[in-house]
Amino acid sequence: MKKKNVFFTGIILILLLFTSCSKDTSNSTGWAYNDPKDGGFEYVYYDEQETGPGLVFIEGGTFSMGLHDQDVMYDWNAIPRRVTVSSFYMDETEVRNVDYREYLYWLHRIYIDYPEVYKKALPDTLVWRKRLGYNEPYTEYYLRHPAYQNYPVVGVNWLQANDYCAWRTDRVNEMIMIRDGYMNWNPTGQTADDNFNTDAYFAGQYEGAVRQQLDDYDPNNDFRKVRMEDGVMLPRYRLPTEAEWEFAALGLIGEVVSERVHNQRIYPWTGHYIRMDDKSGYGSKDVGQIRANIVRGRGDYMGTAGSLNEAHDITSPVDAMWPNDYGLYAMAGNVNEWVMDVYRNLTTQDANEFRPFRGNVYKTQVRDEEGAIAEKDSLGHIQWRDVTDEEAFNRYNYNTADNINYLDGDWQSSLDYADESASKDNTNSNRVYDTGKKGTEGTWQKKYRGKLNAQTMIDNRARVYKGGGWHDRAYWMSPGTRRFLDQEQSRDDLGFRCAMFRVGSQVQGAQ
Image 1 (cartoon, rainbow, N blue to C red):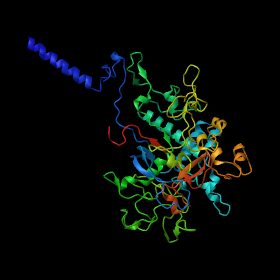
Image 2 (image 1 turned 120 degrees about the vertical axis):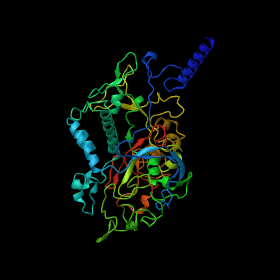
Image 3 (image 1 turned 60 degrees about the vertical axis):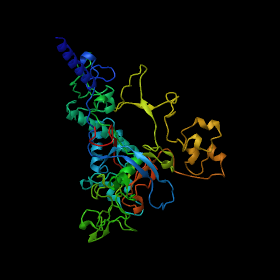
Image 4 (image 1 turned 45 degrees about the vertical axis):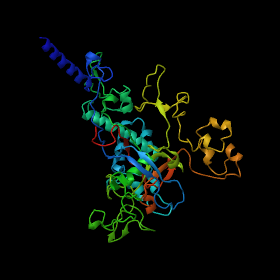
């Protein structure tokens, strides 16, 4: 009998040991996960991030960011530097006219009582006009006509592109919630102040078509809504950072052998020229074709009649050319593309080696006196504000909300460094770049008159765009080249594509 008791005791100990090592039990406390009897703390068995509509997975890594060809513009604004980019997702193609018109249609339908929302989102179709050229038909037809629906949208400024990304986030997450049964199908029941918004849903301020069908292990509740911890909804769609865009455009994954890049690319393909060669692998019929929609030479936009080369006079359909090794189309030519970054000449030298970016303005959700998230605005959005200096006080990693000018435009990097009074205004980049119209003089200009007589368009509204467009020469197709434009301006050769953060493992398919 004694031996039998010892045997059963051993079995129990083994079972307890097995249970303590299981994911069903906390390794920290020994309490069971997902058990109302033990308090109901939930452990989610998560596989990996779903690839959102239109996106392609971009496996990250280290690369030499900057220009690897001759700097014919002598800007010295893209000096090579080794950095690391995390894995992320990017649109397979540029955002098309039909995509943007879907966005406009939704705004017009939902915000019918707020026509200014729709008007604010409209692209500037007059970007096609040239003083000494006849492009008037494009102002009328390019955005709306079905012949151009698969062409990249243009005339969209940086602010409008960001608004589109935010809208797309909510529509994709709304469809995921409907698909997975967490929300009812309700495309016609939404209004200006009651449409699905991801932030508002997580804040508990969206009651529209919610189906509360998730069992809640909390013994105090029976059901609950989806939470961030469930991993159901996707991260935000957004513009890619300059480093992400350049990394994805180069597509060096096609040049790697045992962690060694054996051929540093100038363009998004192997080789130092822009025509297709017989080693490309695309077939003999493509040999000699121009690889991107650009200007081949003075006055030559499409080739010769009867034997057109790339055969596109202005923009081309977004998937008309060959993809790079990540499967991304038109990462050179067709249209330039907005990225997130604020322009500075020496960003590649100043920014972090890991996930470099200039443009951080840290924000937090507006809260009421009791600390609860404030009610959403009239458009159904959660309200955000800049972090105050008091809230950032005593942090080692930042001490103010607006970090655009850090090391390049702030007081410490200016000629006003000896003037203690100038340190109070840490957001005025004009002190360095003398931005503005000629003839206007502020305190800084008067103080240094005669020493520096510079006029520039660089300020905190100058945003980077990359990639080259349909009326650019081959030089601008190199992913390392960079230009800038005011965030409220647009062009007929400037579009955008969206990106998304990758959560968890940096390798797709790994758990």
